Length: 211
Length: 203
Image 1 (cartoon, rainbow over the protein chains, first blue to last red):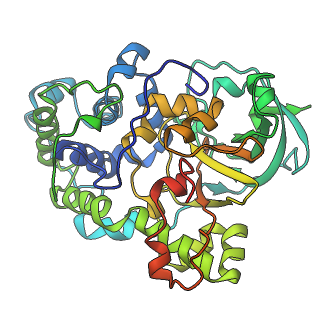
Image 2 (tube, each protein chain N blue to C red):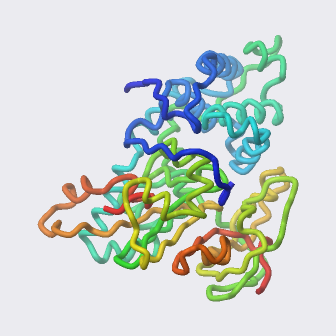
């Protein structure tokens, strides 16, 4: 939704508890502890699949709740009947939680990485001019609409990272080189933008071509 | 810990369905019954996000960078390791980049696609950061957004917006306010605000 106008007011909020109702904390915690959390890209994609008009009317944790519930069903962790009745189906064997209480702190503070080995050679390096491809996939992508078909400059190369366009669909991590690409505000938004301003995005190589 | 039901919970100020608390409770009881989640783990996760992470962590990073030039240099070249030196590591902080505000440059961080935010140093994002309004406008009208938070950016300052589209998370290193030369790190950290580290404010 980057660059859209008319999506309402920004309402500042003081620093304080991140949750504004107890159920929000439980939704956050269930989402983090859920066996579906292993694939963060699939979780994001599931929330993106909420139809636009509904998505815009929902609060943040309502979206998380909906995404979690749907993913539990789609990944086979719960049946429609179980989700409707909130009771385990008869004869269901009780599983072992993926995340136990004593593992919460070590797990939440563990140093992770999305960097992966990559057999190929990255096509670009800092300083290169690139154009974003005009890609409009049906599935998950991290190339925002507002940045498609625009010319920018690579300002950093980050090695090969897990590629969400593949990983979100269970098609494997398919690591691809990741770059930070800087666009002038005028390139993205036209002549009315301040000529000094820029917008930088982190974009995978398949989104880019040489300019 | 208080669990007040505030209006600023929502994108458009509408009330959530009154049954959300019940529906969430029902899902939790199902997941516990099926052995998919440990209720004590859920308590520990809530506690982590309410008490262990938050913008005070980031403020310590900033104050340390203001006080120690060698640390600041490390922070600007390898933020992930430099932040880990102070003990802040974990999910949504795997790959950190720190961007520095100067007299000539102002940085603003957003995630237009969802709600990406550096959890280990800032905790979970405020509602406005996750709102459609902020996500849509920060990239096209950063000066207008910052002005709404109370800071008019001069015409000749360069505004750099960072859209967190991958697993790299951004933290703004604000300029050290003038007249703070005698302050120790604790006093400096108290001057650092969450909004200053997102870039919607200048200190």
